[in-house]
Image (cartoon, rainbow, N blue to C red; front, side):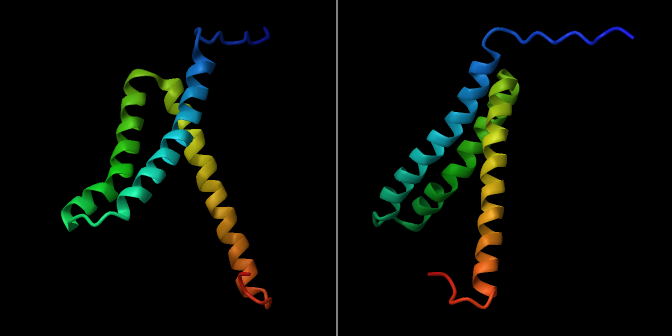
Length: 107
């Protein structure tokens, strides 16, 4: 049996991957800052609903656009979302143990 040859990645593959990974993190931090400043303003209810839906719409649109045009960016974005989801699950488990272990609760 012949050894399997290593698949060659096109130039810029890893650059696009890390661009997608870091782009999601930086973009969502900027969205959180913008939402925090906008949510303190006294806007009407329809405007507030649109502003609160903006992160969901922008993240989903970025995923769809990356899937169509550049797959490595999509893979980096999915890795960032997966890591964030895993950290949220770990934080929930930690708080569950902390609150129900007979200790004093959350400090």
